[in-house]
Amino acid sequence: MKPLRIVVHPDNRAALPGGTPRCRPSRRGFARGPGHVCRHQEDIGSGSLVPEGLSEEAVAAAWDEYKGTELNPNSALPGKYKELIGLAVAAQIPCRYCIYFHTEAARLNGADTREVKEAVVMSSLTRKWSTILNGQQTDEAAFRAGMDKVFAYVKQPRPRSRSG
Amino acid sequence: VTDASSAYRDIEQTLGAVPPMFKLYPAAGIAGAWQEFKTVQLNPKSAIPGKYKELIGLAVAAQVPCRFCVYFHTQAAKLNGANDQEIAEALAMAGLTRHWSTFLNGNLISEPTFRKEVDQIVAILRKRSQTASR
Image (tube, rainbow over all chains, first blue to last red; front, side, top):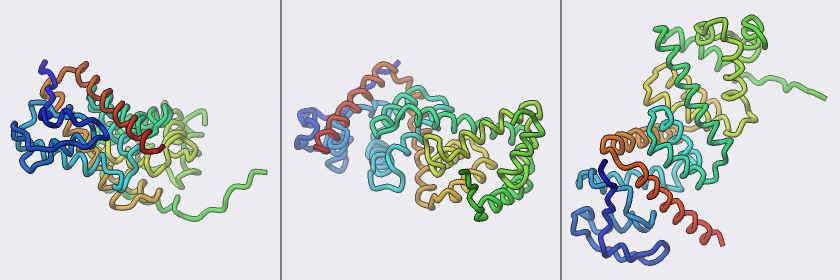
């Protein structure tokens, strides 16, 4: 097993979370444009989770993508649901690292146990029906037509059932 | 709903018809399968709002990949108010998860070390968000 090696440049290690990071291009070449390692640290407070195995060319772009999508509070989906989506995907790969990470990240974003459970169940439901529909070589056009009827039906405004 | 015929009746009442997917399910298990579908996915009082349940379904479907499921969950997410940006982002999250899964598993990263690092990061971020909210 390869250890997960921390790639933060020594100049950046001194920067504590919340403090002012001292940014300098890493000698390792990870900070091609000065600041990639540093921006990483500003946000996460650690340079870990970037194992040695990631090619140097890939680090900056991978981090920018990750930051712009998963960590971006101004993206289309709230953080909690982004992490629950990640968990649902992770659970059925299955990826033990990803399950641990997304569960913790979802909780950090305010998800409770019920929500975590439900995301996992939604994942398993999707896998279940995928197995059935694909395994039976379902006709796709017929499937869509049948579903379109259902969607049209449930879109219709219906009088609310009055109980009491 | 206790048996197949009452399940089909309930499906028709809820969805307007019995769609092909439920006809494909073995009759012996349809009552339970329908109940599960209804109480989890269609239940407006479950833990996760419908829009996000469908986006979760879509994210999973996209990387199975399952064409039926992609179609279904995209339509169902839109029906629940999801816009194109939200759909694109759910798909991107599925892609990101697969991407890092491939990378972490492929490198046989040490699991205890990985967990420890996640714990550290979560602790830092939790502390930071507490400080920020003060």
